Length: 419
Ligand code: UDP
Image 1 (cartoon, helix red, strand yellow):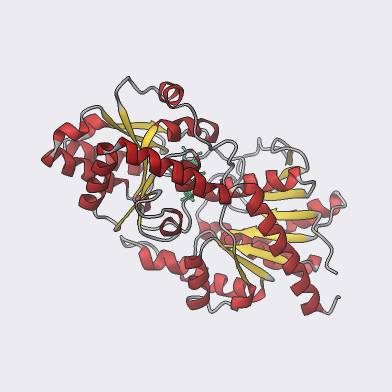
Image 2 (tube, protein in one colour; image 1 turned 180 degrees about the horizontal axis):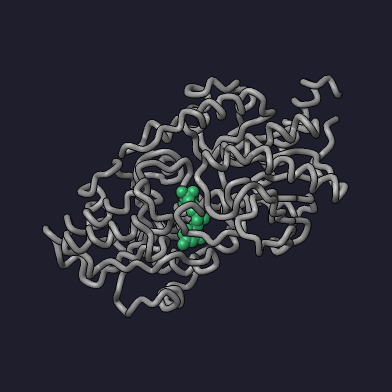
């Protein structure tokens, strides 16, 4: 019989689970690694998260994520934020640093769980040396990035080649949704038997409906004001400009609808280029008076934002999952999202929110008006959203992942004849 997993090496090479969220590059994956590690730690699984040291001030080991969880900072080339291709070149140094750490601390692991393409390259080396099973989750796939790039972006062919290799050797691959499963099969020719669909989770105790009035006060809403909310990294792929265009569309046909409406944008520091672009667009379309840029917020502050909002808007060009939509739903807030990727699975049309075509401000405007016009329906959708989110509680998701880890162990033993 396959033994259960007691210790895990989580690889999050290019970004730290301790990083502040809502920056250009820090979002869903950081939350995933952090929350999963915490949940496994609570169960007594020993988790070491290996991440690149971004600044000399970061300690070798950080234990702030809770019992049994250590964030281990490993030196890999120069400090600071780096381009993925430079990070790729530093993989061998990072791997060496992990070996050294494990040897110095006399530590071994039952399994490697690596996140994003670059960490897969790290896992590729570690599993050979340690002879343990490895599970990979990509979070985003290079082949999808190539397909949806709306403006000329550097193509990521080298990354795709790496990803193709990773799916060959990985003992198991975790897909967040049915859509990612299909992409792994059709774009990467992954062996379907090694792919498990396990979505990211949500902390259902933290993200739960809060008393509305208190939440509204906590986020600074004035009596009578109604908030439309966006939360996330500010980058063009999030298509926040669609909301600004939707506000302009509403203003042109039914300006009274926008009376007392605030469109609150959480995420994106003041210097963020997308934030500047959005602010300029709002000015140009004469809707700036309804738009508030409040910058990145700590995860612990978000439940108040979600609970205070009439609706969460996520009009992204693409989302492999969309944790923000799930957090809003868990908080009892309906979601209007574009009908793509993970969002198409999370949002049930007219039940927990609405799905609209990508970059269709008129359709988005109509749905915003629907929500604002019918508070009873809005509340019913919020209740249904909350209920639907419960199946994504990290406790359920961690159970499913533990099963995947066990399967990985079995397949690695079969492969190596080490039964
Ligand atoms: N987030 C946050 N503060 C911010 C902006 C975002 O804590 O100011 C968190 C948000 O709550 C979510 C994650 O960052 O957990 C974003 O994940 P999502 O899957 O929505 O988007 P991604 O960043 O993966 O594109």
